[in-house]
Length: 336
Image: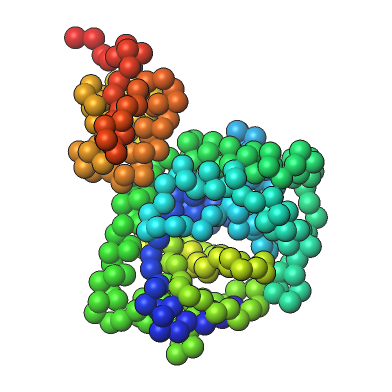
């Protein structure tokens, strides 16, 4: 059992955070289950099957190696500590790619060797992981970030607006519960294996520890129905705040991205095609988010993809970044 001690200050600083990357790794946990934990079986087309097929088809060997071993601890550098309520995928991937080499090495050692005091089981390192580590910690981290980005683009990004709406609905529902019944009701209702008493939160998981916390982060996830906890196993001055990754309330399955209805959509996807079409004049990320009812982080991600593809030009106006179509993008417009 893992106990997180919460005093009055920690409770006052307990908050919800939204993380695109945490939802990617939440989906990766489904690799360990033959059925994908999505109720559709190994041959289904649910989220679990989609994640597994993408990992296999894209040959994302490093990500697969993290989630196919017998160990019970997954390195925390895969899930960087959020710095604000809603993180952007770009900031999270940058944090993965630039993790301190000492932290990465220690977390890999903890994963493979385990920690008897914490109740963490280890396991044998896959060849793919060892080969990548031979290239050095810095390059290893960049490779992991690149594979996470590929998985996002292929399996999560196209569904993110609908999944993001489900996360928003979950937070709104629990915030309303907190207003009516108190934060204790919210904490106790996150998952059957989360218990709350006057000393803090008790988590019925394999790890064993008593941890003081200055704050607790609550992170809704949309793929797995299981509970995951992110705590810092490493000693040091900068201890990461514990996070509870819990399944968001069920929502309708968003399914695959709707079939695009334009030549641009055929090439780049429906969401990016809509944003691109709206950039015949310069617009900011905030303006696009409001016009298309999308999260600013979602818009930022898609604009980054379009910019790297040479379809957008980025200019600055004061403190704002403005995006507009390039001549190459104009060539994708339908005739007539």
